[in-house]
Amino acid sequence: MVRRRPELFLAYVGAGQVVDMQQGEAVSYAALMAQLQARADAKSIAALEAVGPPPYASRMGLMAQRRICSRPARRWTVRRCGPCRWRLLTSPGLSAMDTWAYVAGAMFSIAALYDALMAYRIGDLGTGSRSR
Image (cartoon, rainbow, N blue to C red):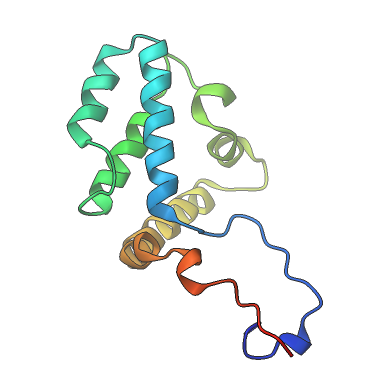
């Protein structure tokens, strides 16, 4: 829309956009492997090596990597669970059904959008600059 009608926009500010998911996943995989090696977590290292580095053939590889990334310690804490999951589990304003719906929606979205997300690279669109 900005390319088609740039006069309608003064600025665009965004957060959390997919820019290059394949590159992001490669960075994530390397960072996770480094953390596991620093902790000498042989079981998780073997599991991550079995998944292999991205690009994954399907979303199942991505989900396997995420499971390894979020393996809980002996007890659930903010640090081990992740702030977003912790808030879902402890929010007084959310029911168990709300939490289930959130997770189900996230799973539906990744299944429906995985191929498009993995193929998208914002750089392929160019800068969008044009002279007037």
